[in-house]
Image 1: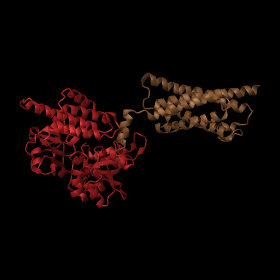
Image 2: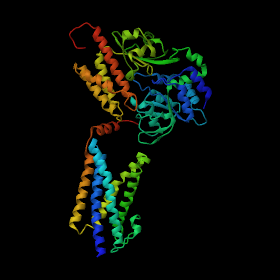
Image 3: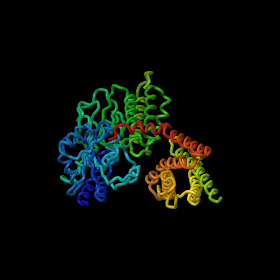
Image 4: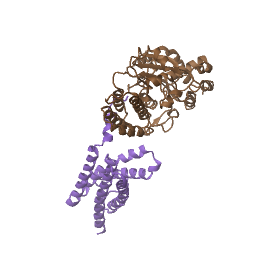
Length: 357
Length: 188
C-alpha cells in the first residue's frame, strides 16, 4: 500500500469523474489492500461524453504516469478500456498498451461490465454483492478476481495531484466538489469541445467556449442519458455544479453538457432516446429488459398526443429505480422525469395556441 | 419356491421403480421448465418430486437386493455399485448399476443441498438426464422384453418422459425469449 499517495488523494478530495463521484482515495486504498488489477476506463460511455478520449489524445503520458502510481510494482496489471473502433482505442494501441476492447454499447462501459469483460465474461453489468475491488463472484458463482476501475480523467488527475499538490487541486472548484474538471460541450453549439472547467463554472461560460448555442435553443441536457434536462433559462441562472443542479433533481454526472437541438419537438427527441435506451438493455434484470421498452412505448404514445399515456409514464418512472444490477434504469427514469418537468414548465409558460404540446 | 418369489418380487419392484423414477423425473422437468407451476401448485409439485424419489429408493433397494439374493442368475454384491461386473448380462445389468451410482450422487447432493454451492448441486442434478435413459434401457432389455404388460409400462414411461422433456424444450416464455435475443447481440 502506498500510504503517502492515499493521504495526498484524501487531502485533495478527488472523486471519480466517471459520474458516480466516489472518493478516489477510498477506492485506491481498497485496491491496494486487495492487490486489485487496474482498469482505466477511457470509453466515454455516456451520450455526448468526449473527455476520456480527450485525455488520451492530449495527456497520454500523464495518464500512464497516473496509472503507474495507482498500480505500482514491477509487473503492474493495468488495462485500458476503450470502445471498439474509437480514436482512443487506436491511440492506446499505438502506444503499445494492453487495451480492453469494449463493444460500443451504453451499459458495456459500466464498471462491473468492464470487470466482467476483463475476466473473460460478457460486457454486461454484474450484481455487486460487495465491491469487486475486493474480488467476488458473479451471479453464476464464478470467481471474479479483485479489480478496480477508474475513469481515465480521474487517473490523469491523480498524476496531476501528485505533481502539483493537493493545494493546487483544491484551488479549483467548490469546497464540496474540488478540483478541475473536463466538460464535453456539444449538441446545437458552434463546435463540439472539451472544456477545462470546474464545478461552479457557469453554463454561459461553458457554451461560450463552444462558440455559443444555436438560435432558438431552449433546453439543455446535463449528463446525457444518465442525467436530465433543464430549461435554457434555468441554465443561464445557474452554474454547472452539484449544488445548483441538485434542486432540479439532476446529478453532475460525468461531465457532459448538451444544447438540445430546437428543431424537433423535445417530446420527440426524448421518445427517440428512450427507444434507443430500451435497445441498450443487457437483458438481465426484469425492470430493465421489460420496464425500459414499456417506458419508451408509453412515451411514444404520449408524444403522439395520447394524454392518457402520462399516467403510464409516471408509473414506470416510479418503478424503475433501485431494482437493477446497475444504475442504467435509474438513470433513464431520471432522464424521463426531468423531460416531463421541462415539458410541463414550457407548456405552462407558453400562450395557448390550440395545438398539442 | 422362495427363489421364484424373490424373482417375481425383483421384477415387480423393478418396474415400479421405473414408473416412480419417471414420475419423479417428469416433476423435476416441469419444475425447471419455463412455464413452471407457481404458488401452492409449485409446493405440491416440489414435495411430490422429493417424497416420491425417496419412495422410489425403497422399491429400488428391494429390487436390487432381491435380484442378487435370488441366486437364479449370478450378479454379485459388487455389482450394486461397480458397473459391468455382473456375470449375468454384464452390459445391461451394468447400465442399471450406473443408474444407481448416478442416483446415489443425485440423492446425496440433494440431501446436502444447503451445504453445497448451487452450481455444484445443479451440475450433479443434470446427470438425471443420463440416469433416466440408463434405467429405462436396463429395464427394457432385461426383464420386460417377454412380458407385454411390463414392457408396455416401460414404453409408456418413455413416451411420458420424452413428451415432458419436449415440452420443456419447446415452450416459449417472453422472459427467456427476450434474454436470448439480447444475449445474441454484441457483448464482447
